[in-house]
Image (cartoon, rainbow, N blue to C red; front, side, top):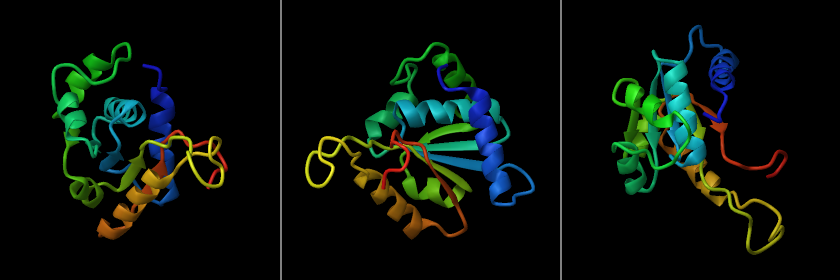
Length: 158
């Protein structure tokens, strides 16, 4: 797979240290099941088999595709890894509140297209989808969370 498994596993362990957890998180959430979020979730599930990975997408067809025999994206070896992890420690769900409630660490991997209007139009990323999800996390979280931006937003944009 194109995502580097070791880098993702190290990122999870590093995030656990950042929040002073004695052990890595027992549940990781991923919001956004496209190329970035879906492949990230699959690699974390593969490299951290004792960690539950819950994946949510606002498009129910995307979740249904991940739960089918053919993943909605193609990466070499992805189908095999999904089949080994799905319903063991990797779960594609339609319930965002569940993901936020149960996960200790949440990756937000949502669409960040280029702005089409306003300041930065044609150049800057449109982060409104990220902002909406951040607000959902803030409103639904009932315990401390580490939130990781995993979208394709260029560094130093805000």
